[in-house]
Image (cartoon, rainbow, N blue to C red; front, side):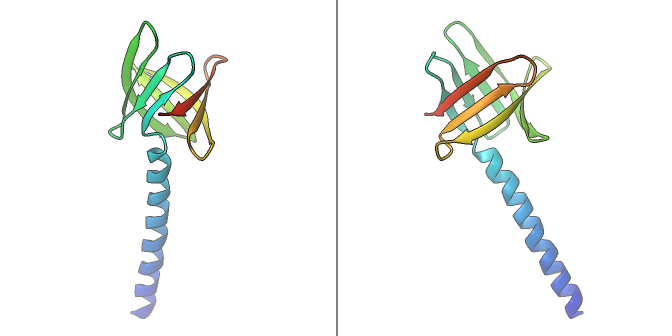
Length: 107
């Protein structure tokens, strides 16, 4: 009986650690991000986003998938590799479809 309790405790600790890692990664994206050209990206915790530049505003959904962030707009998936720097205040997104890179600062 004691072995089962120890095994269940280990499984619980590992599960909580794994799930908290996922939540923390997603929470790093939440907020308003902007570049110096007037582009704004707002990422919400409910899995939606809006982005706007000088002339256009788009909205859709987002998710982390296979170590990438995937934005979906009008049923089209737009995957990006990403990296954080500057203590999580700078987000670099590199499109996996076309050769574009955006460097955004958390507002």
